[in-house]
Length: 336
Image 1 (tube, helix red, strand yellow):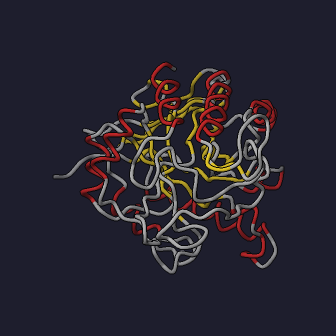
Image 2 (cartoon, helix red, strand yellow):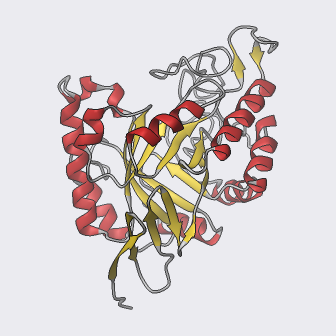
């Protein structure tokens, strides 16, 4: 079946908005000033970062997709963020059928797997650009923390990123292009990335990211979402009344306050993706067991011990048992 494509550019108020009609049966994704719209209605991202690696493995797989989607729907999650493309039509169809949207992330150097360096990311976009589950395309994940990957010159990354975003606009006029930037971008990033439509920011500012919304308002008029936010469920020290060791209460309390801040500033921020859906036993040691430790750059703002224990970030444990934070997220997402 063939479909006609239509590019509609709409001037809205004092700002320029745009939307692209993808195919006749698809949702219409648009941007109006600081907002993301689907079918002309405000779409607020209530999301989760999703990288399902089973116990004992270091490779992502979707064997539990049906259960995972059921739990996401229960929690009021409407958006999934993945760090590399899902090249499986059946999985994308299931996400769409569940009523969720997905942010498809592309890495810079992924050994040729739909990455930016090889240019193969364009093949994925050509293949799936008409799929209704996809909210937008996201390039990179806080690469600004790693100039060493780009000959110690972060401008090299910004050039590659802006060029890639321009190529996506040529191929797919139905969806915005974003990037997941570590913290607030500086003037070099903003000025270099004119082809970025929506900004994702990975933000860890203890249990209250409120200040970043004020900073963003003064920096840019484009939509912004928190591409990562949250807390792990392990305390490396006893602090603020939270005991050392696995501490689901600390995680739940932190996520509650973070989400309160996000919803309170919904006139500036277009949503949030909680990091992450399940614990990642593959990250810091033996993938057969849960290890303490691991490190992420610029993460000392993690509540409440300033130590990001990489294998304890799930809102579910590796066996899909709900942590305390699951019910908190469910309550916040369904009541806002």
